[in-house]
Picture: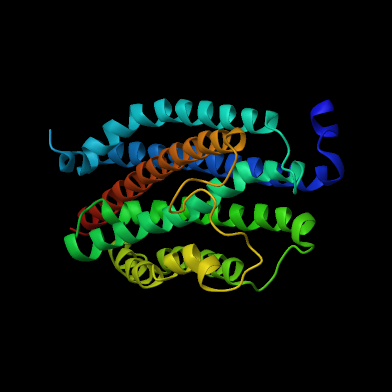
Length: 53
Length: 243
């Protein structure tokens, strides 16, 4: 808490900037990880179908 | 092995499998170190604690320009050398670059309100960065407009190359025109004008975000290669079913 209290009257702007960066980058990383799983599964399923023929 | 051999899609996938986690740890460590030392650094004599926004805003601005440069070089690879990984790299650079450009605008607005008294002004630097963001969105829209990734790649590459003219405009806008934005203080001819107690945390943080950009770029390229592999398999299956 002392860390934030030391930010003075502009604490909102500093914390909002760091918060926006953390949320946006985390969202991008989660989307990339989920998309990777989806694409991997799709390729595995399609290759499986090709092998069965 | 010559560097060009790593541009083979299969070799790239194998390389990405161990480079992404390794560089992810490097990026995380550098960012934490940079931001921690930045938060411990003294407040600026004019801006007070608002200077803490610099440790993220400046790397985002550099990477917004850096991302566009990667996209333009990839566009040359698509249009001139017809390299198989070039448009994959261009699309990935557009996706990561757009996020960093958005963050540059948001953190800049939040830094501007207490220091300039406004979130936004139609100033040369701010406006040219907004144009850069719109160019990113335009390239991403072109990628979504075509079903065929090769056609989409060529259209996006043309826009990326034409839009590259905006990169030097962003960089030199504060020198060429009157601007409320401050001039360059690190990337300038001569020594940086920032005190070392703030410069070193900024360089650490920027280094970390550069590595993070590389990791995200590589991860998005890996996803795109899988997406194209799935597309090829679907087309092959459809062709077989028609026989």
